[in-house]
Image 1: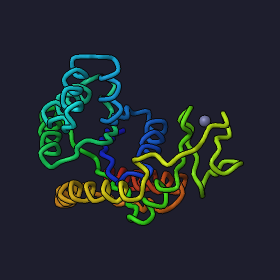
Image 2: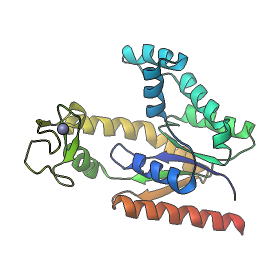
Image 3: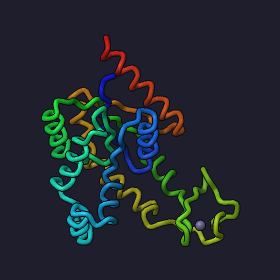
Length: 224
Ligand SMILES: [Zn+2]
């Protein structure tokens, strides 16, 4: 079986993380979510974590070369020999170029960049409906997973609030940033015929089925 080297793209609230975890299970491939890797490094106080924290404490983005070094190290590891799923990287065209250069050095190719598309209104509906428990961090959704009693956590009875991140204005701002940054990446992969668009407006199961069908088709075409 050929390698499956995937990049996941999609706005916040697109269900990218859920799909990444499913792909990880279905294909037994490592799933590298840059945000998780950085948070774990900061928590474990590794060299990377200390470097990253300096930037994050100043409110700056962790620079490309730091992120690239982290990803390069993982792609060269034995667990990624049959493929990998990247989430949160690349985030910029220079990062995409660095990824290409590293894969070329390893004699490998990217299989596809999967773009999970969800329109802005749907993102606001999904993220804006979240209610988080002030004590245990338990998350509910006014529409998709409402608590038994409005404004009260089912698990520990604490008050449910809208996190700052989930305020509609903040979500709109995050979406603007996402679109500004990601459009050039979409064009980059489209130009290389690697972009595959998936309608993320369906249920997670349906989106997962669509992705599996898409990958199966790509493999069949590859075999012909
Ligand atoms: Zn709770």
